[in-house]
Image 1 (cartoon, rainbow, N blue to C red):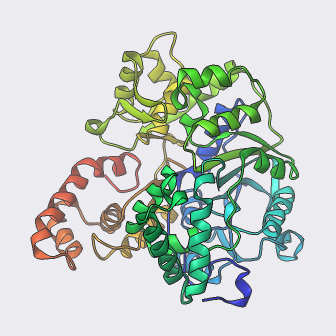
Image 2: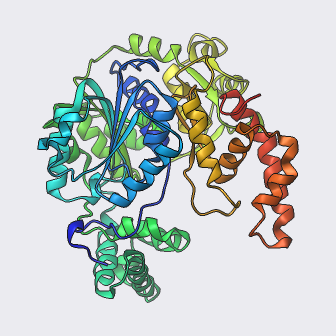
Length: 502
């Protein structure tokens, strides 16, 4: 349903809640080091500021605030429903270091309200740039120019070209069909997708030739209507070439550094030997990125920029990487040493495999892990594999207990889970040690809340009963197995991260 104030943005249905680790300060700092740029992570009680633009329901901002109670967090969104959800969660968790602002980014930079926004050490935008108008993008750049501190880091995700080139017609078809169908945005998206699938079934040229289009039409059948509405029913959706985004943010004195997804910074993992040979003929970083984007199915880029990048040599970079501490976020038995990458399946070498096995034993510095691999060990390679394969995260704090703010937010998240098949999930748990959050499905949020309330895992039968309330009886044994597997494999991780008590 069209509302006059939305200006082509989907606002009649709230976006899905989600936590995305790419938005964390530690991942931004790691991306800077991979790009040979100095990166400083503030201490938990430093006068640091984190700003999220287009925050949605604010889950990532809430997690950041709870994990860093001394920081100031500001979360901004155009949709008042999103701001209401985030602000209510902040009140429930009694977080006093986060502020939610309902604002139009097109003109916010020159408004009186912007004066109260502190300059930010970290800025993040996920799912924003490609879905807003040119006026809003210009307003974002003005706000970044005024609110990013010198040395501040900016994370920006966007739909990338040329990967989306083959799906431009599909998105336009869905949008044009939807706005003519009427009704709420989720109904419009479903109407557009139905026509697209019908045309694909009768061999429509542009819906069958593109592998991306074929895959999207197949996979969207199981996706949430909230996601589909915001993904396909924006009037302004515009994927972009990397070089154009870099040029736009240069107006705010922001330098592009690297990708926040670690493995994307290593051509050996991303490209074939023949593709690397062509790319290596060129030194210009923007041209090299374009060559990579021509070779990779990279629909969503996660780029990191710095306002005033301080370039460092490889020796200083490796020293900084070696001082980082990593913690496993999987159980030792789940370790994968054969990793799927765009260039194929990568089987890590024996030395790297030994270091990965050692990393599963618990928190360790990269330097300590490399000591087991010999003199030729590469800290960047080790970190890119451990972090990029989602088997470890960087721990920004080696000691200290969870602050009450993190415990309160995690209890609030878990209290919202009433069934193992709950569709509503915040997707994260705040962690002091990580300085951010741990991606967590509803079951882990439920368990964490119960454990933080004084229960123990020997109360699992009561948990299973509560989580099975709307599950058909023949599936109760499956619920029991899932809960006990989580207790065996995930609970030790939550305890190691001090998200729940021992």
